Length: 566
Image (cartoon, rainbow, N blue to C red; front, side, top):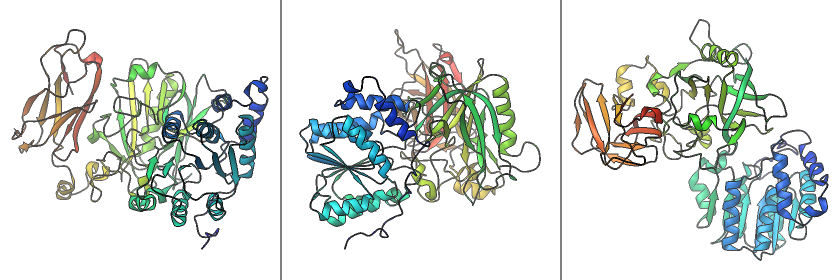
């Protein structure tokens, strides 16, 4: 039975994806207005270079260099005859991947696009690139077009498909392909943005996706547009409870010397969307000692994409509230949006802080997700450990936050949601999956002691109090580094299975049978987990692999033989 228009999820209206009115037409005029157009004609890379240049001012949602390489490497390796793309937009991927398929002896590239205006522009750019006879743009709904291609006999099997269209349609289109039997052993499915916030069906049930694609190769790509924006804060506005009691924001406006479009805007959540608990968790580190501060200072003003780069890793610039040891978690405050009285809500914290940042001409580093219009940033909060409703937003090394450089000192501002998990797994999901500890349960003093004890990690009373970091430079010492643990509790703690982890991911398991006595300290040598004298992190994990404590240190704290206290 053919799939009708009412059988699948609703598709977006024409123009829904547009980031700025008319920017697609501006792209066309920009490229066709080049004085050396004849030298560009028939040269795909020249067209792509101009599209990338245009994107420096107008954000165009191209696939991004790291993901481009993944797919082009697949094309070079497998040499498919036919490739299908769902979501053509301006034709960037069609030109890039279509050229790669053609170079590798392929026969055709089919690109499906809902929006006829975008399809027309894409066709003009594809023609300019010299690919019009190889790349075919098909206008219409993806499910209808796929059904037509199958029934006409044009597509009997899928060799390589790249999904980058309307996100909730990913799963329904894959099910349609499965129904027609065109996904076969050896089919490769590359899906961009599967962690996209509006794409719940794809990851809602991983077993369903696995069943849908069966034994066939799948490739998923990370949440897009995560990065850090270096700028100068100039002013801010905010919404009180009277202005918006559902989803209020504080808007921080900033300027950068490389921004020809005026002020940028950071949209900061000041209330959670979780109806069961709308409070935020607020951490303020007034003296933020970060071994990467100097690296941040070397950045040029403007937005720097971290997503999909080497910076989105333990040694990189990306933030991770849990793995990065950015703050002592017990110092967090549970704060509502806006209530009467002093020093009792999130606005009471942020307003004087940002006033000082503006008045003192500070440099600000805003972590989050790039706005679609290219001139703003949001998701400036913890982006992991969220409940099931927001599970598709979860990931590691993609947390938002604000760092302020005042010249003589740094400050760190970190915001989470009360319902988020204190512990997450390697995919950023709450752990354990059910009954996990939330920030509310960790930080709320009103929770009865017995209930807190049942839900809390019993070993959080053990802390990293000192580290002796040897010299590992040109004349390294053979003596191992050492750390000192302190038990703050009135009962002993058994450390079987516990370990120390450095920022490179090396682990040192503590000796079996070790018991840390009440109110006592004990030092341990690190033979397998060297601590960098250039700065880094030290994390204490329990037998379940859950974080008990974590610290950061800088290179200036690690003079040879010097004990670093935390």
